[in-house]
Image (tube, rainbow, N blue to C red; front, side):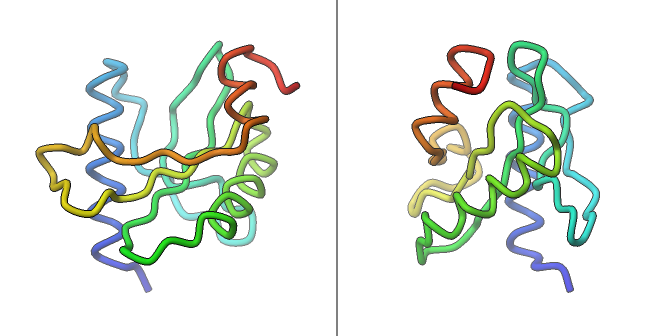
Length: 116
């Protein structure tokens, strides 16, 4: 069953990234079950895919979420896996102020264009 709050947040994130990157290939990812590839498709850095996991909740589980993003990174054979999670008190109009969490290795990969 789809979480409507989560689906709405994914839509906001996808639409904002599509607008910022000026790329209509960025959209919500089709659900793929065990081989989950994240919630947003089409984001690339240095020509390489990024796995994006979205979370719309007030209760943080950063370690679990980052682990989930890492699995999705592997499933997608992506450069990095990141978690985009709702920032309490920031509504739709401030979607660009949403938090992004990742490991230091993923941050370095984004900067370098290759896995360290």
